[in-house]
Image (cartoon, rainbow, N blue to C red; front, side, top):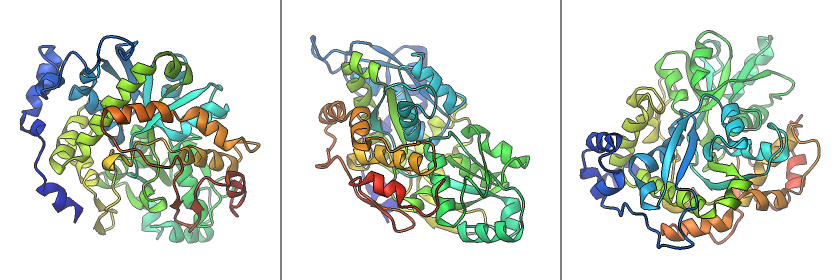
Length: 425
């Protein structure tokens, strides 16, 4: 098993440093995580054109497990190594992240892939040219059904569809942002099981940290959200996991490091430094079980995700339970680096979200899918940051994936792909 192989690896030297002490030292301003790691605190930049134009960057995040690489880049001092200081800003909702990104209150953010493309196309808020700097994670989200639905036999897609046919009423499902990843996973899964999310159900938007509380009081029958809130619903006894998003699409794109195109153009060296720092943190997280465990301990704090560590660490290790007695080890758990395979901003990933926006009527016409993706995904900047961090770069800007319904996505004919689905708006 992958767990045993990882556990047998030598834990990096950084693990020998007392983690709490490093955090306290950093908080006290006596030293940086970089110095504790033996990194050059003066930055990895020679004087001259490579120096970050903006040395302090404000990065927003939502309390989710997949904010970890951005948080750890700051906590471990990888930002200092590359000559910047990351100032973390905890946000309450994706709409808030969108607004603060577009008005310049945030320099960058841990953000939904589909949110960036929605803003780019003018369908998820006021239209603005946006930039995807890198992918932050693959996998690790889940669709939860309420305990009440499960008690009536709705425990997966097929049994939910049958229940909705026999026990007719208005069914409500929640996602986190109208053009975001969770909306698209929820819609894809419902549709693959013969449920049209636009016609057969009511869909509402709820911020991730509020999902479990809303299910507890009966505001929805199901939701799709990032961890740890799927597992939290099980721990709290209010929901069950019907499916994971990696079962919808193995190694799917999820959150990105996003900014505006104006920022990326004005501060390219700063963007490279941000990306390099986050790549280093991503590599650190995926390097060992010990690192994952320490990451879970850090982000569980009220400053970040604000939950108990045990709610985070099980699924980050790939140890799943569905709330109905089934347990399994999932090899396709949330990954932050995976030898660099996670982080490349594939054009086909960005294009896929637009095909789904078109499928569900959010886009009224087919855009020039490839041209938009080339404008948004900053592949040249990413390659620079990858070189700086010795991160491998794929040969192709497209990738091929098979989704849960057997449909293959390769980015080659997006217009035909978007029109090919039987269940659509």
